[in-house]
Length: 164
Image (tube, rainbow, N blue to C red):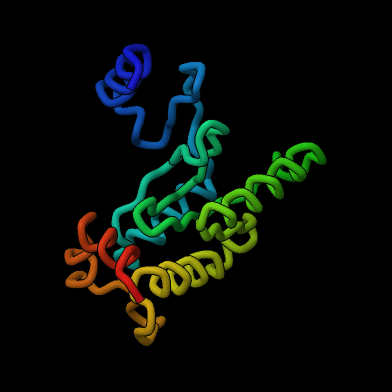
């Protein structure tokens, strides 16, 4: 990590920016979107496994995902109004195609899906299938606390790279 980004990261933590704000590439502070905060709250309620926000991947392009589980190559992208711009729409399609080629599964949802609860249901089922292939999915309790505790980095890595 570059010295500049370490300073920005340290500054962000020291002033509590992680609580609803994030730092962009140019060290500008931007509020997290209401949709992202709603989705994060829903994930906490369902006891989702640990995730990363604004995860940068597919280097050198440095695409970002709103929510990511890098060890199993799964992410959620919440498309707000900016994604309706024609040039952004085409960039998003390219990002999605390149993600698939690299083995990533990306769930792209809209604000409507987040607000009506479909986004969290879809994400829970897709992530569960990615983490526990062949096991039955139960929508009432997708991630029990025991399962979530068991999902250490080593376990995820072993599951995704086990010979078939």
